Image (cartoon, rainbow, N blue to C red; front, side, top):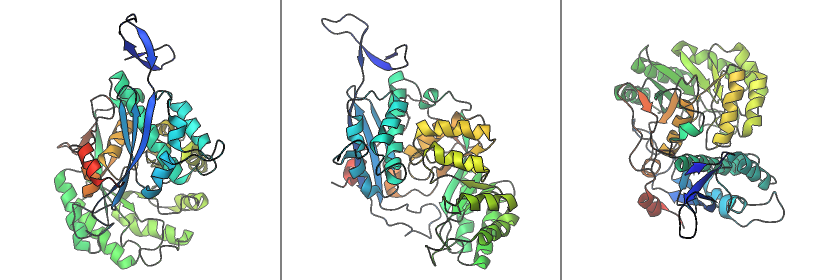
Length: 415
């Protein structure tokens, strides 16, 4: 492999009839969404501190080139719709196209142009939501392919590594019983994590029980490990998922959790209610974090310009992929706001997040899903594992550095 003067990588060939050094551009030959189904249902293992399922569906995106370079990423949200968006039938003019049709025979190194082409090609039904999530995964794949072609770890393509390892925090769900939450937090401490985040579940149904749960978790973590809280914005516990908290209720929540010294409270206001975030942040005794459901740089700039959060949490499989994430980091630095990625499902996302976070000058933590299901855990060969000091190593092999278990994928594939 080599780079031309424009930064495009090409294959150096030496075949009969051609002189050494002839150039041939690498081309995309396939873009596929593979729908997987597991054998668990969301939240069924609520009494196990080391494993809570994220659901029984997962979609993987696979981008292949004519030189055998392959990129993998994932789609988590409404995965059953993803195959239609990726490889369905394009209809009508530009704006009604599916992503595979947009990308076929393109040069995968031209990430910025291809991002814009995907965005315009899906404009009538995309711009946010599942179409952007599929775009994000494809964009990640293209960056992985670029790094493979250059025979360098992905972080080199993103601007270079600032640190070799990253502090990891364990991410899990709240359990119903305070004792189960204590046991889970203690297990994370014993595993070496420097911090833990709990979210969703029963939180918000009963203020008294919330207090008992947080007390149990803080006791288990001790004073030296950080706690993050994710109450969810979708409603009050499980009682009414369609009623959002009022501004007053959100502010009361922040005051209620403050005694447990959380590093942040995240994503507990509807993502469109930017004014509510700004109102609460101005009065909150604890820092606010959000961003896992935002898409495109314009969403993130709206949050930054409004001054409504202390920490931005882009999800690399939702925000627009690494192409957008690089812009987010630049804009966040201008506003002196930290970026800590949301990284919840499989080791594919952990890998992308670790490479990205390693390039940031101020990388406080990387999120690590400590409660993977058999499906999300099984899609990769081997797992990213925690160092003894509670950090995650940044992969060093060319590309993403996380291998997909193709046999497992084929076994769980839905035709």
